[in-house]
Length: 521
Image (cartoon, rainbow, N blue to C red; front, top):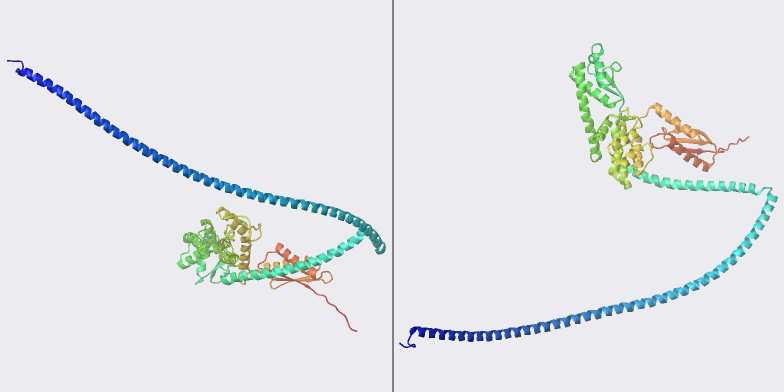
């Protein structure tokens, strides 16, 4: 067998040929792939070059546009600055022109002032010369007058000053009289209008109370039951209530006497319940008095709350409300103090509204102005000061505290509210029928009024007329002239205001009469 026919050789040959063919095939594919990759790379490079050139062109265009825009903005800014500089230069030129003009005017004025100064100096020299001549003439004339009138210069000056003083006093008195009359007319018209509106819009009821309470007895035998065995019932009643029981003074009646109105009211109600029940002994008396006392406390609080509601105020301090309720059982010159306080509150509120003030504050001050009268008598001091201290402890405002403390002129007034409360208090107290006055008090007030009038020089007689509402003063005509009579009336009014306490107002009338009497024979 030949070598060519050997299968192994043939296989190896085929394998070698196949390997060589595969190798060259791979080389051919590799060359083709490299050629394709080179072409693709070249294409990518060309695309990148084209994109870079495009981007470069766009960047250049954008840069050119931005540069152009910046150049335009810069040109506009420079143009604006140029205009501003031009305008500023124009204003500087105008200001320089104006300054030059003002400087010229100042130079002219300085020249004019210099000329005026020279003229004034010349006139001053001339005036001094004339003054010297006048002094010499005046000295010569004084010497001549002293020789003619037999008076020295000091004596002549004193006479002249007296004459001038008398004339000035007369002129001042006349002027004062005219001013006071005009002011009084205007003030009286306005005050009359405000007070008449307030009084017309409010009308209150006035009650007249005393320090005693009287209970009618249906049967005279009840007196013995009230007294009890050996007086034990009446002693128990007086000890429990703190009042005095009068049995024998009035037939078929029991009189309860006490200065404390609350105790007197408790005693009256307790006695009425005992009489209605019929069981009167010390134990029953103590039970009824204790029950009535507890009810009275509630009644006092309700009375205070009702007063606050009637005036239309916001809730007050509980202590103030309780004190207001106690005023229901107190009276001043037979006028119920709580009713008086309500009336003052309404009057003050209406007058405050007419004057443009706070009506609520005025009502509050008017309602509380007599709160000091409800305080126990163990607290010393005037009721105005005591009431002010109570309101200060309860946190009231200083305006209301001053109105309460000064409504009787015991402390200085700090505002118009105090004057308003004084006026409302006077109106309520001086209305006809509001208060009663004892004969002793009335006589003393009239005597004091006449004493004030007689204390002035030149007064001959004084008469208090119209129940002390007017003082008529008769003067000596040779000592008091007409102008002095007017001033005398003013001085008497001032002294009455300073020294006397009186309701309403007092009119002072000065009468000067000259009588010429001759006898025909």
